[in-house]
Length: 259
Ligand SMILES: [Zn+2]
Image 1 (spheres, rainbow, N blue to C red):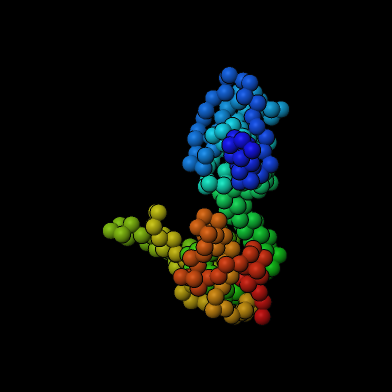
Image 2 (cartoon, helix red, strand yellow; image 1 turned 90 degrees about the vertical axis):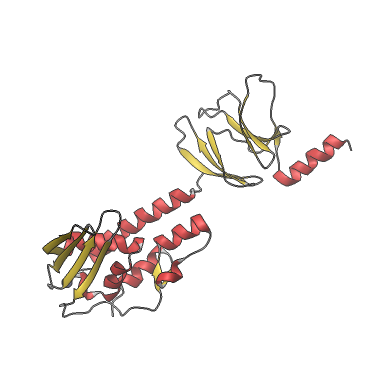
């Protein structure tokens, strides 16, 4: 076997079933070189979706059958790909595995989690919480934790159940302190706020006569922060707040679980 053939078969082993680029066009333009022996080339010949870019090895072997409109190098094997004239449709391309167009990028996964949690929470509030949030110890606890999931809960509780009774401002620390009461049971809350700094809501005095929700678990499930850690850092840092990684449903069930 000629040296070239051996080299080509080696590349095929590394990158899977590949096709060689038709190099007849003289208009091709090199857009980027990556450290894994690959390069991004604009073929100047659009496919039906207007995509013109291809990824290939330095030797000209195509790594992906589809053309696309843009690519972001993630690591030696993974690229984030964009498609169409508006660079809208994105997916993950893994060398040797093809493109998962339905696959979400880390940012899309996190955005979706925010949206899913926020919507599910609104739904849960409208259906389950026919009494005030002060009767759910887990909800009150979660609000005071300062995690992202707690932020959504806090917003819903403030918007729907609390009214401001008193407000004061400390100019030296630029902190606003508000006293709030629950519209239903008149429990007393304190909300401290500082632009880009403090945003904490705590229950100071619970006047609620009926406790519907279950007591706190030692480690509470968490959806958004755990997922964010996982997709961006490959690990969770939640143990610091006694929260544990969980899915949307388990987190919501934990919060709203009744006695
Ligand atoms: Zn209340």
